[in-house]
Image (cartoon, rainbow, N blue to C red):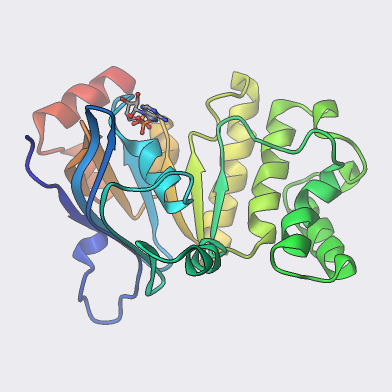
Amino acid sequence: MPKAATATVDGAAGRPGSRELIRLEQVTKRFGDNTVLDRLDFSVDAGKHVTLIGPSGSGKTTILRLLMTLTKPDEGTITVDGEQLFPAPEKRCREVRKKIGMVFQQFNLFPNMTVLRNITEAPVTVLGLPRQEAEARARELLDLVGLADKCDVRPTQLSGGQQQRVAIARALAMRPRVLLLDEVTSALDPELVAGVLDLLRDIARSTDITMLCVTHEMSFARDISDQVLMFDSGRVIESGPPEKLFGDPDHERTREFLSAVL
Ligand code: ADP
């Protein structure tokens, strides 16, 4: 069995002035006989941008899904903003979960709702925001993502890049502390990728939101990350600032992976 993996952003645990927002401790996740994550430890400080890279099937998306409570670990603890997300009673889990937004590879917009409604639905039903206030915020966000004129259309009338922009606006509408990005450009036509990545670069630069991204876009990872974690077989095999990890990786497996994708 592989040994437990450990990674800390900026070696941040306990660093004066740092505030840990996400912590996974000894997290194990199995699907049947397949141990996808094996006693994984890692933490992310508030406001940091952390990117998970590594081969397909190494467990990166599973981490985001655990944080989103779309699946549960078999063992270990997950803490977000000082509150336990797992193990936790369902009610507390729902409260903690409100601090986390996620953008998926396949957008996952509600096809039967207008763009505006897609963005206001959760703030109204989950946060209890008055509809008028939710709509005002949604319009601001649509302006931010360059789609101010698309409030009343349905997602199917938009390009993939535009749908992903709506999904980003929808995640931000909940004012999350953490934004999880799961290969958000993988389903896009190549000419639409740059626009979505530029938008995310802007968001990373202009907000204090904590980001945890799974991406195969290495130049994007290099640009936005404070820390890059290299995964292999459910373990962090190497972590470091992007200059080090991309420029002078320590691990042979990291070098192999980067030479295949760069
Ligand atoms: P990555 O994001 O690094 O490509 P994933 O986290 O998606 O990897 O998947 C890690 C492993 O977990 C893979 O072997 C995948 O087949 C398996 N896996 C993920 N989700 C499920 C599921 N719902 N049921 C069974 N196996 C799963």
